[in-house]
Every structure is written in structure tokens, then in C-alpha cells.
Length: 121
Image 1 (cartoon, rainbow, N blue to C red):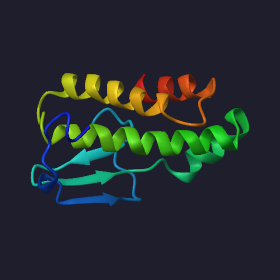
Image 2: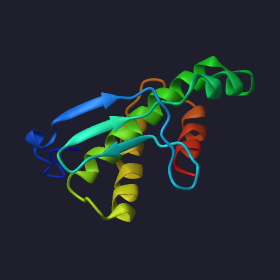
Image 3: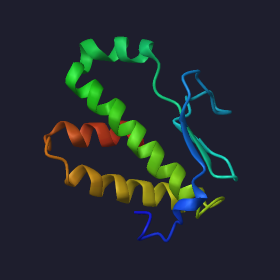
Image 4: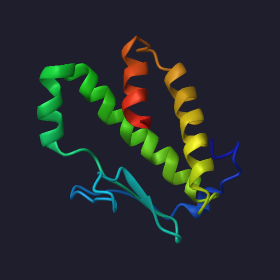
């Protein structure tokens, strides 16, 4: 993706996982954030979310969701390095590249579409 989008690797200064929750203005949890200087922050789902959803969806699906959300957030924030203020284009490309990633997974099953829907709706 970096080569295809011509995003130079030296633009990426740091990628950090932050455990404290960060909220958007609308109150929803934030999955990631990209600073102009090339610092990318990823915010994983809190344990409460996992505990609530595990009985409903199962441990395997929740684990796949957590990993997929982190990958989608990373893709999204990397695209912001090139398309800084074009959120619509970044979202469209995030979906496209994440779908390419999903198609190449060995664990392809009916749950991948459910996970993609959870991530992008």
C-alpha cells in the first residue's frame, strides 16, 4: 500500500499503541490518530467492550475483530500521511485496502464480512 500510494517510509516517525481511551467529539471511541509530524497513535478497544461482546459473538470473532480494527486503523492513519485533510478519500481507500487484506487471509470465513461491517458502519 505504501508503494502504491507513494507514501515515503521516512514520513512515518513513530507508531504507538495508547491504552487510555480517546473519544471523538461525537462521543464514539477513536481507533487511531495521525499527527502532522508523522506520529501515529492506535487506540485498542477497552476490555469492557470485549467482555460484553464475547458471549454474543464468541472469542474467536472478537479476537479477529480486535486485530482487524487495529489493521484498519493503521491503514487509515498511514493514508492520512498523504491525504491529510481528505477524510472521504482516506475512508474509501481504507475500505479498499482492508478488503484486499481480508481477501488474502487464510482464515477466510463468513465472519469476515460481519467484521468488515462492524468496522465500517
